[in-house]
Length: 433
Ligand code: SF4
Image (cartoon, rainbow, N blue to C red):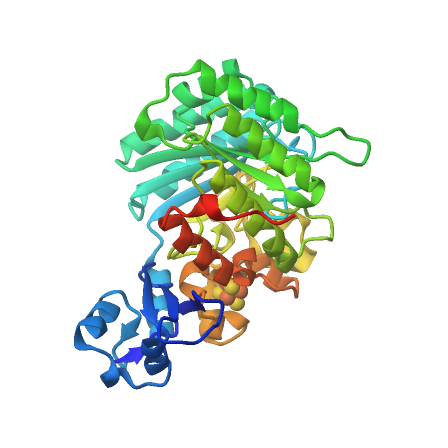
């Protein structure tokens, strides 16, 4: 056996040596964390596997920390990713009034809603895709500026989507991205119960450029919704709040978390930390701050994913079963594409729904991602996080930037945090300003 290349490890004793020194190891393949003595870890990294107790060896093998010596792990991961396209996913931009400016989503569109011709063409496209019987599930993400104004379009398309999912016997799920400022409970009721939109990704805006922050409005809406509807236990987390931390002070971020904790929203709300696309986006900087906020939110009782899990596709841009549609009927393989250069747009546009079939291509440049990684075109070729990352943001790589997510820069902190969280020792930790 050999030590897998897809592990992360860190000392549990701040690097101190001694008979009691321990090390946490996380397998990016099985997503299992184990704690071993530093002496065992020393044997593992030095290839002295036969010096490790047989029972421990078997355990490590069972969780993919030890793998057969002949296994080409990179090929196994990429082959697994390449096969995983059994979901049909649509990212539908029904309008463009969202003002949060998240770095992961920058549609540049006019201030209007999706019209009837595009809706009809989209329903035809959806039916053609589902008729192909390539898919087991149909997932929709609505990207919405003002849910009130877009409600007629969303309700109409939701009815069509659910009818098509039933007709072709695939599971249907729907989520929504919006800035939350006009997500009032009357609108939410229609979206949640009639349109079957069960998860809401709400980006908070910290204000600036003569605009006030929308955070207090959004939080008031969410608390009102949570107090108004009898959600079922299996409906789980309803709101994922993205806080763009470069637009808020530290006190303001803590205040948002405190307000939702005081409203007892812990089992319905979770947090995600990001930055806006204003030239300041820096994953390493985000990593430095986000770990403090993740810790604080957990201390207040919220449930946050600390360690990233195995993923078979980095994002919709590289997923052969996914597409984003804009108000003009353009079909892209990446929702942030409209903000890219003409060459990148040209290489990754699938066609226009109003121009009819056939679409220009289903094999855009971005969808060749698995082969690009195999060729060693990016750092992903040698990166130990590949199974849990998938290759980050393909658009950023295309633009000559690093596509790495923030967790690349704080994985060791996350490992310790996860370990301590499991040991329910969170209350002993002190957040540092
Ligand atoms: S995007 Fe960055 S973190 Fe992700 S696999 Fe590639 S090199 Fe690793």
